[in-house]
Length: 238
Ligand SMILES: Cc1cc2nc3c(=O)[nH]c(=O)nc-3n(C[C@H](O)[C@H](O)[C@H](O)COP(=O)(O)OP(=O)(O)OC[C@H]3O[C@@H](n4cnc5c(N)ncnc54)[C@H](O)[C@@H]3O)c2cc1C
Image (cartoon, rainbow, N blue to C red):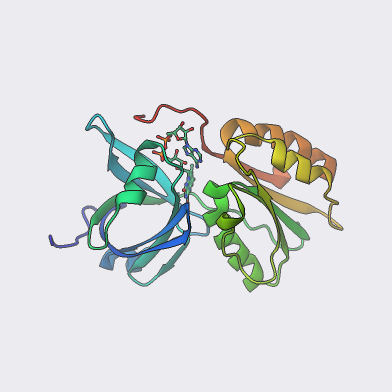
């Protein structure tokens, strides 16, 4: 096996796959290891851009959330949705293989309790690793978090910190990337007392539709962190 090394000081890492686990039939946990991981800060919900080879042989990058970091080990969870270089890469990885990535990028905001007395997260599978990290950060500071999570079926329930109030919304054969399950669940939700803050992660166009519904809970735009994590029918070789 080639030596694992830090390629540059600008955030490119060459790592070894230390461990692989199936969290569910379509979610694979990937533990990457490199000594340089220990020397960096990995902000809450930050992501890495994994360097991959597309089907035409050209380099592509795909983004995955840092679920957790401990010393030299970094954990990411990848959805095996069945199309595209990222999903194939995650499916075909083997322990001992090498993974190059750039990062970290971005951070999930966690507003203080004085400005957000309740927290709500709406997501599909791609955002669950970020919401998993958020749930741990919220629990560590005694904050309550409600989660509405769209998943393919009940087998895809994702481990979240104890105390998180989660409602699983199963597609049961319906296509991913549509807003209806989340907007339907939002209709039945009551806002908490005082000011709130919401996280909205998922397919880019679907989250725009869901974001419009959040006003009903009294949430204005600055009280919502919305981010498109993937695009329906994007070209697989992009
Ligand atoms: C900041 C950030 C953090 C992210 N964190 C994670 C993470 O932790 N785990 C994770 O799995 N993903 C995460 N994503 C989403 C991931 O980067 C995208 O899903 C990406 O498109 C996957 O690339 P691909 O090569 O598998 O598919 P692509 O080549 O991008 O697309 C191929 C086909 O698959 C479809 N597709 C792509 N993604 C999905 C999906 N999630 N579900 C269903 N169909 C899909 C597309 O519509 C297209 O038709 C994150 C994205 C961002 C921006």
